[in-house]
Image (tube, rainbow, N blue to C red; front, side):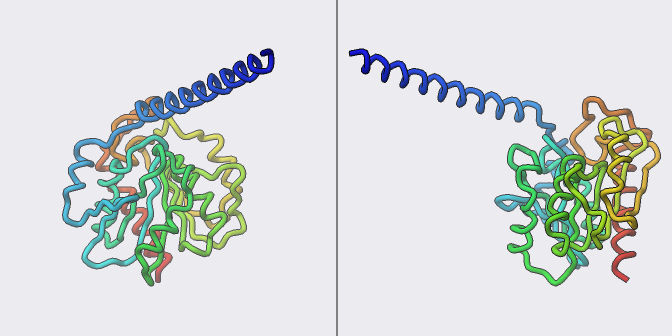
Length: 249
């Protein structure tokens, strides 16, 4: 009788733990979803553009004449479509741009998705990996392991994690930041410069902030930009295009 009571108590304990874990996971997922920044209407409307294709795991924008390919990892807790205006402007410069859908909108959970994109879109053109904020840190993780798979790395208001060391890499690296960024840890940004190649190109957009790298509204904690979103993204596109052209003589 006592043995049966012990088994029953053990089963109840396991059931209680199971229910607790399920509730914890559901709560975490709901928290992440409710705290995800949504794409603005001017971004989502581009999903109807004839040059835009929404595959199962990524959005792509393909110009008539493709020069190179750019894979853009979204910022943490930001919807994929929020980067469509920036990607559309880049495609106008001749780049085929891919924006992957990330698990729970966190690029850190699938840093290797560029491999799937490349496999599904074979090309003899150069591949460039870009990322905004957490997406940039996630892109750096991939580049650290597979630097021969991409021509270069483009960090948008981002820096590598302490465990990512690209200092000896031959990668072409461009780092773009905004002088009014209230989200990025500027002290950490400076400290991690030693983890990037010595030849890394650094550009700070005067008056630019963190939120304007995408089209998802104003991010809590950011500073007000002196530029419109369109003005800042226009500068970003020009900087990226000039950088790539300089690496492709």
